[in-house]
Length: 454
Image 1 (cartoon, rainbow, N blue to C red):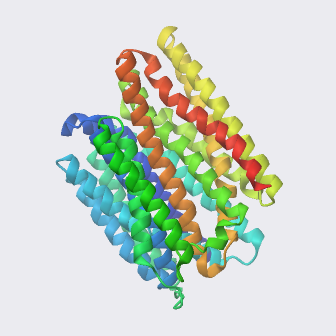
Image 2: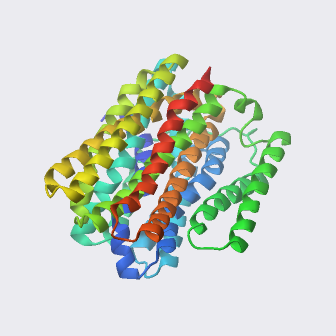
Image 3: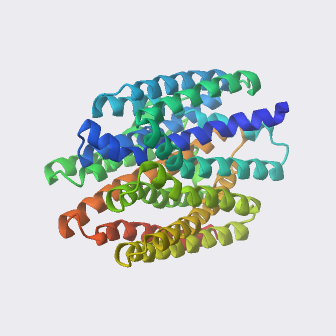
């Protein structure tokens, strides 16, 4: 392995592990629910806490990566990540499990901005940056989509705790590779960090996600204050960030459509992906009674197609190319959803489960291509709109949008399942129709939003 290849591999390993950790737990949730006696809301917090903390702290991680030596920042993050993962392997309650996810996510919050910042600084041209962003997007999509396979196989063979052991080992490997290949790039001394702004941003994201998770079981007396807190924190952050001498993201960057529209697309794309991955765990195991390893294998086409989609759209750098790529992605998501619905109905009623599984895998393949194709242009456009000195924060903004979208997807998926179960009972297949409606809405938005680039 040459030094440059080792450097690129180390950078993309960070985002791969972040996204693998984000989704690999999904197929272990039914087993965790049984062993630790958890309810739906507790499972949602276990599933969402990692992505929630990532969304809340990634912008701070980006600021730290721009301000201080990148290898030092990354080393501290990996240590937190390893400690959190190891704690999860020993968890005996939902509280400890959530704490382990919070610690791991707090460490992982620097992985993406450090990696993107390093790649931005070592790129020689826009074409080279686009090529590296294509590789990056493949790692993001592969990590997200391979997570269920990874988690399902480990859970089936050694139990759900083996997932946390696996993530601990990956973190230790990451430390070794960082020492060997990551250059000690200095930070920018003039780059200041505003902790109040980051606190407001984190409060806003926590309140938004908390609102949707609490939506399934709490009354208005709880939901109203949480919703008002989310709105107040968002307005306060926008106002303070705009007037601050050291904003998290310079307000002028938001006036660039390539930047702001790309953040919205990243959010919507991962809302659909997060909802899909969350509901798959329960559809395949609770409804169709598959073993976690088999359920994970069924999701493998999603992973492979995500990689193909990311590579296919890697050359989209001009606005018209980006618009075309994202619209193709939206069409793939909607087509795949339609095939999935047909496959589930066929599986349920025809008596030939093999064909039903084939249709479901085909659907995941088509949807995965769409998720991957929508991801690559977003990374390039967001990072290319700022200077190399602000690449960490810029990349963190895209990552935060993805994590927030995925976390809302988990919350919305749980709310949809709870609503469907309450109205139709646990025996009806159409319980999952509510969740399908969420994915359909996200696909339509993906088709419409690219118009705003022009």
